[in-house]
Image (cartoon, rainbow, N blue to C red):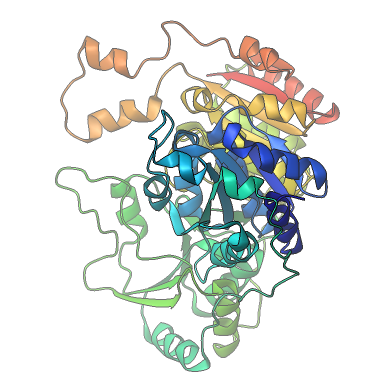
Length: 516
């Protein structure tokens, strides 16, 4: 056995069971170690941004870290955008980055880079293996650091000669990791006194407060005090559907978000921070909390915010659950209507089964789907937390591995899908039940809106061309088919509905192009 095997065995003992890989020469002994330890599921990704996005989706749905195995600094650099999204999602990831052998680094070979510097941009902790004897200990520490107290990315830099060493570090058995912090009784009481006295309080939710337990507790408080509940525009995971309390999603555009927060005199935060607008705009305030409103943090992202809400509800004697709306019934489908995002939402309402997972990377089009499912089938909606597009298809890969018995959807804009369409190959290789919906408007549509909003003037031909994806149009049927995923193009509500029914009935991944 060589030292890399101790790393894999130790990770398995800590409950890390999946490795999303894109290895190179420096990682070959890790590849061999994965081969010798088949309990660690190795999932090959053609691009590192798929590996990092898949690790994010896996963590959001499983609540525990996967590992990633990446090749040197350039491989890590390819993964950074989706690691940025994972960092914003506050999810645990163990990121293993191979490095040159220690004596080789000083030679400044072509692939030598500042790996630790790359790691620092997205990691809450970075460990360097200096000797083979450290491997198991640092592996456990990486898992510990990924869990928190604020969950995040823990990166472990592994020199090739440490991995290939015939020194066999002790394989460390299961270690208990600290749970999230608990809010004290005194802190709960202080918030309860404030929210009782407020005239127009808002509960503002993020992180695990948006999961089923947190949403239900917030609903109990809302019923007791007749107050509003708003959650982050791009929360990591939102429990939705007819069996869940339905809160309000904060609007994306700053002016609308300010209206959402209007007249609030107390903002009680669970699992988030006070909201700000996504971008700065001339003449518009970026701070969305109304002037004069008090901000009180019930629970931050290091804390069990869902339990804190439940405890607050108990102290407030908010014992009655919020009345749920009856399950939405889909209206009759006008099959000949030209397709738009609303019809996609309508078809999902008609046919999606309970327990589905939706990975949203569709920006404007996703916002058109979202309202249709508010009281529809029960599902989890995963958002683009960090704004770095190219997340939907990779996130679906990880979510499908975490939830192999559930139907997973990836909603993608055509521009976003083009960033990481290599994920389709992994979906096909792993035979995953993922339905990818690509909204093909042949434009960076959100940027057309933003161009006008930031006061940059009327777009001329050059500006229009920079936001246009129609010259040439991407052939998504060819792209999907080329990666091994059955693909079809749809232009009407009826065509999309038929394609969705077929995809749901046929195992394996599918791609449906929604021409809008």
